[in-house]
Amino acid sequence: MKNMMRKSLLALAVGAGMTSLAAQAEITIGLAGPVTGPLAQYGDMQFIGAEMAIERINQQGGVDGEQLKGVKYDDACDPKQAVAVANQIVNDGVRFVVGHLCSSATQPASDIYAEEGILMITAASTSPAITEAGYETVFRTIGLDSMQGPVAGNYIAEQAKPERMAIIHDKQQYGEGIATGVKETVEEAGVDVVVFEGITAGDKDFSSLISKLKRENVDFVYYGGYHPELGLLLRQSRELGFDAQYMGPEGVGNPDISKIAGEASEGLLVTLPQAFETDPDNADLVAAFEAKNQDPSGPFVMPAYTAVYLMAEAMKATETTDPYEVADYLHENTFDTPIGEVQYDEKGDLEEFNFVVYTWHADGTKTEAQ
Image (tube, rainbow, N blue to C red):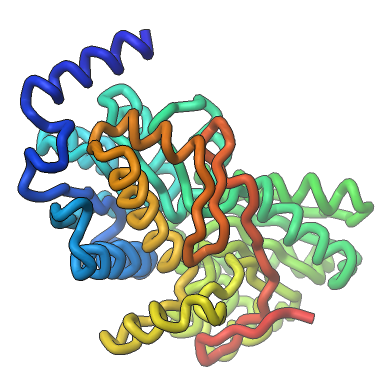
């Protein structure tokens, strides 16, 4: 069935004169993620990274003389809206996508892209379920929760050494998935998890939860989810005299958490991709972001840049914009990129990706945790 689909799509492309780069004026890349909504800050990270790659590639002559064009699509990190966006991308004839951002949005969109022969690289979605289906044209430029969870869990067990731990999540694919991974790691190491439960994304009042955590004498809280809820949880914990150590994944690593939590965000532990902006090999790229007053340190900036870079390199090497040919090239080769050496396994996941534990500060900066 897959080979038949590939042949039919290729035949249509040839008939339309689309497989040759020389036959099209520009190559459109859909940039799908939250333009609006509470997680739009993460979308900004993805968009500025991808748009910088498009700009620099075009300045260097594009892809065999053809210019790249980025078009934003707003899914608001909502699964239903992501499906609508994916269908719009199909209708618009776009065959390459950087996105989506939230795992719960990426999952249903990826099903559509795989069925329609569109190549997607997500620079932010970490849920292993996205690539479990083994879709040929679905990739990512970020690590998995199954990589990130053990990094957090091992740090908790070996460095923090809590006596009574709570794990809270937002009941969504990303948040619950990473929370479950951390739970498995710490319990294997002998840490006592006395509370494991979910809140509802969008909740504002966590007083009942905090009262429960106090009653259970919890001294360490891991939160799986995004920064809006954790920011409120941190602030309200401080206000109610609950003084436990908090930790979260890259979904909370946003300067806006400090705007929400204020001084209560000081000392928060966060797992994030390694600081690619500090790599000397990326100095010129970092300078280009800074010249535009853009922050290159967001966790999804360099992965999004890399997603576009990989697409362009594969198009150049194959001399085609057929997504299957580009995907084959990505699977079969190794690339030097701003996030380091990229090599894919058969599912479209990175063979290696490093997550690092950082200490977050109230001014929105971070330092590597000790």
